Amino acid sequence: MDNTKSLYQEVILDHNRKPRNYGTLEHPSHHAVGHNPLCGDHLDLSLQVENDQINYIAFHGESCAICKASASMMTTAVKGKTRATAETLIEEFRQMAMGKLDLNHPHQLGRLTVFSGIRDLPTRVKCAILPWHTLHAALNALTSISTEADNDPIQSPSGNT
Image (tube, rainbow, N blue to C red; front, side, top):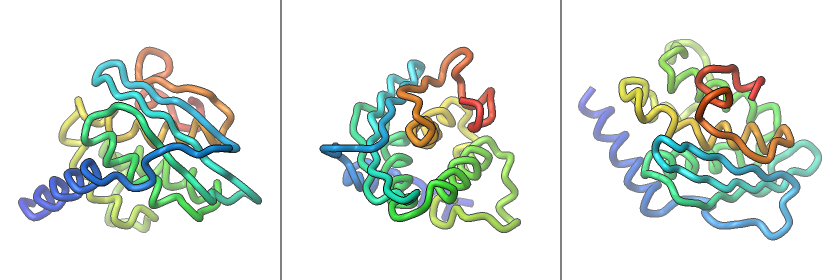
């Protein structure tokens, strides 16, 4: 377990210091803003989707290390993938972060499982899943999403946000 925690910390620090796909896209086809008022995370996500494939993705904003690392790894994971694959990853990541995904069964998360321990830090779960719910919002033509009140993605399935 200590090796898992150590790897988790290394990945978070690396992606926080050198986030992948950090910036903006000049002409995105999809865009959404995510906000976590509890932590202060504010994430702006832009995508260029053509023929149902995510060709380009970028994010920027002010967020904690967990949120930024999650966004960085998410953009790397979904770049070049289809919308359907991205939606599967969104749901699997959400379930994993909440401790509801059995990682011993087949899944598509790969290296993203480094975030599996986040389930043990309930106050940080929203930080980790905010980028994923912002991606879901962008893919479904929603301009913004919040982790509070009726918009809380933990309280509703990602398909209903």
